[in-house]
Image (cartoon, rainbow, N blue to C red; front, side):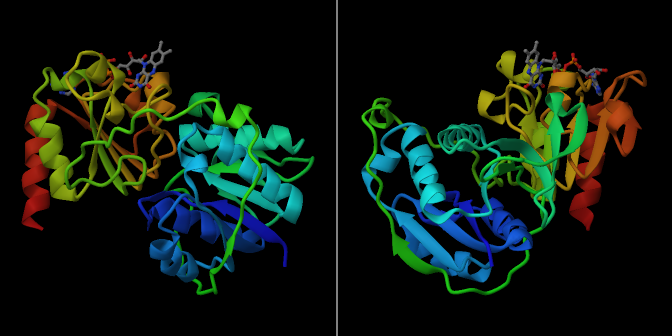
Length: 314
Ligand code: FAD
């Protein structure tokens, strides 16, 4: 069966949910081999085995993690050249899209980004033009690189061996030129990670101030992540790392609740592929209603607390 490489997303050895989803998608195409960059692979191996990784290529060593993007691209390109996999799957984060794009160039191949579904024939459904259109596309040359959005493919377990194999590549001087100087850990308390959360509650200019309690309380009642529009982050009402949209994070949760967000194209670009969209907005003409599955016309400061109370009762 054809090998399919899956770049593992992990935090200190803890495998992120999106990797389980990628392994599930990879099994439609062939036999998944995980690619682990950095230390801690022993901690994640059980998860990789549970979701069907037949092999785990481990590239341990600080040279892969102390430099920005390029070493991982060279690693993936080398693995592609050595193993000729049917495809390479990465999660559609800003960093991984750059890693995959660089590796695709090195291997004279192509990349499809913001993929929301993929078939066994490697036809990818992906979101383009900032989420304005969904297309079906296929890379016709070389090994396709697919950057798949979190929450796009439901993760299903299927046990495999996850046999570890250490790999090492000769990195170029260029790959070592950009060094990581600081890592900032995202402050999000007990809430799920924004791009991985099954439910996201976002607040916009309609919240009216830097008091996001009304948004956070609804999010916490649902076990959701909190997001924000750029109007809210630019105003300093909520930290920039929670911005959803073209210049923020891309989310694809099962449920996206937009509180006081108009639905500008740049915001839609980051949340349009959410499975269910609920908008609370007092303006019946707001464009967010065009893409919502359920709209509440009203003041979010009245509606959201009522929703929170109802959710808490259940
Ligand atoms: P507004 O457009 O001002 O909408 C506020 C909404 O709240 C209105 O619909 C109003 O009816 C409603 N409202 C007001 N009060 C209440 C109330 N009490 N109860 C209920 N509803 C209420 N934007 C992003 O979000 N993410 C991005 O990544 C992003 N990237 C951009 C990149 C570029 C290059 C550019 C040019 C713009 C970008 N923007 C982005 C900005 C985008 O164009 C919009 O300006 C922004 O999304 C608007 O945010 P908003 O919906 O919160 O505010």
